[in-house]
Length: 135
Ligand code: NI
Image 1 (spheres, protein in one colour):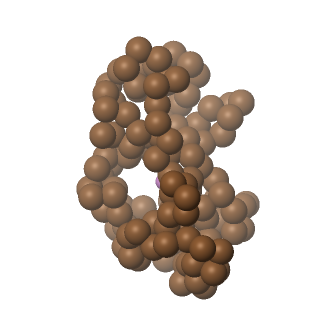
Image 2 (cartoon, helix red, strand yellow):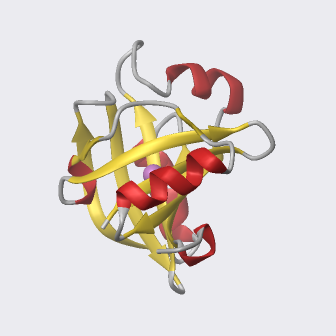
Image 3 (cartoon, helix red, strand yellow):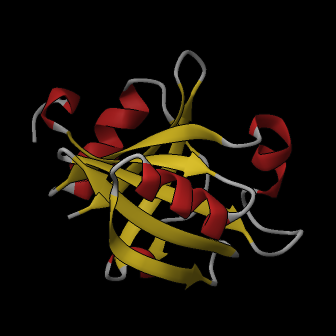
């Protein structure tokens, strides 16, 4: 990977207060569940993946007050809040992101809802939050 332009979109992350009710609404809109509800103990959130027409949406809901997204939840309510990009060269990607002004938001940790692959969030002053999924 020579440029960030080579990153591929993996999913859109969507914060929800009640994951079961939100899932039912997405299903009513024609989405298919591709990954049943999974608990992520690192981030204290429940996660469901749905898909429609090639677009993958991740529903994220905090199950504890000290979840990593509890603060975001207060700010955004039910709302999309990140786009996740996939890389097959995490070290190079990290270097390119840093050079472009992205700052790591958390640790590079496993994502139980995505087969334990490692993910890390970054923030950029002009763009907000992105997630990088290590292929
Ligand atoms: Ni995500």
